[in-house]
Image (cartoon, rainbow, N blue to C red):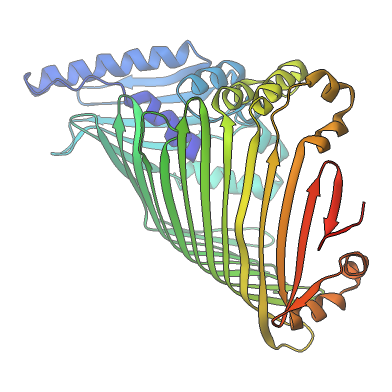
Amino acid sequence: MKKILSIAAVLFVALLGYYTIFGSGQVIELLKKQVDAKVQTLQQNGFSIEERRVEDKSEHFVIHYRDPVMISRYLQSQKVDITAEEAEVYRGLKIAMDITYLEGIYSAISADIYPVAFPHSVATEATPQEKKMLTKVIEEKIFLAHIDINKLFTDFKGYLKDIETTFDGEDPLTLVCKGFKFDGSYDDKRLSSSSNEIKRVALQTKSGGKFLLEKLEGEYEIEGKSSYDFKSQYSIKSLLLRDEDEMGVTLDKLAFKSSGEAKKGFASSKFKFELDSIDIKEAKGMHFFEKITSKSSIENISIAAVEKMQKLDSNDTEGFNAAFKEMLAEGITLRVDELSAKKVRDSKSGEMIDGFDINTLVKIDKVTDFKHLEENPFAILEIIDATMHMEFSDKLYLALQKRPELAIAMIILTPVSKDGKMIFDIEYKDGAMKINGKPIL
């Protein structure tokens, strides 16, 4: 759906906005000419336009995703993040658009967008039951997005039609989607801010499989001249995934924040993740964590190298190597300032015990001898410096010692005990590793 909305945005965002001095009939004619120009642009860049019908205040057409190679190049030029491989997956997709001009006080253009044919990769691999589901989606317009673009062509808002339906079959599937809304603003033909909200999404099979998302809210904003200068935040009240045997995971009160900054051709980003609790049930046992926090960052990423990689074909080894060299030319720094859980449930006793706290720093030094690196890829280990500090509560460390899959690690990693905690200080430098000051390599 994200790709569909991106295509719609590309179609409408550059339309002429200086129509207020004309009468409504003249305005509509101007809008039609601009839409027609955008339709022609799509046709020249890998899409084909089918079933076009133009009326006085509305029109209808179908966008056929025909040539993925041309389309990927075009979308990349419009700052849509899509690779050639991702574009190929959508070959054969057909999206219908029902456009209305000057509908209400807010909108210059309103559009209903819905699929009328699924990609070949989906249709050919679908089981008979899945093909019935796809047919139902198309015939009943189950996935329909509505978009309104304001009369200044600076803002948009929309929604996904509420869904409550059941797909029949050997294992009937019920789908519910409520309160999916979005809006945003454009600045110089670029998305400058957006927000979205989903009240509830639920999928449940008769056999007991279940997915449930409650109350998602998100915001995104460009803060500078580049799309790498941004801030965003998202939250989810609860997320649940269970199979028919009641195995799965439940997340409560998830919050994610990120920000980015571009300076002198290099980008840096910061990330913060918080989770009230995660409850995992698997065949080997049950696991429960409280108050999980993660704070991390990445610094000194070459913007030019990233953009080159995004445009490369997966088989372009030479191009990837060149972009990778550019990426490492000034060095990169990765930080995890915090990865912690306040409480952990002991899977054996069921007792809630104190958790863990980890931080780490990884520096990839500036590469000057790429020939040496090409001849010996393992030489990259010579330019990596890393430190890691880990603290486990005594009880958690004892619980980990009892897990057979961690037995070898616990023999190698000898901790220092301090203030009721087991501490590991790990350092990797010049190809050698030390744990609490003692070399192991």
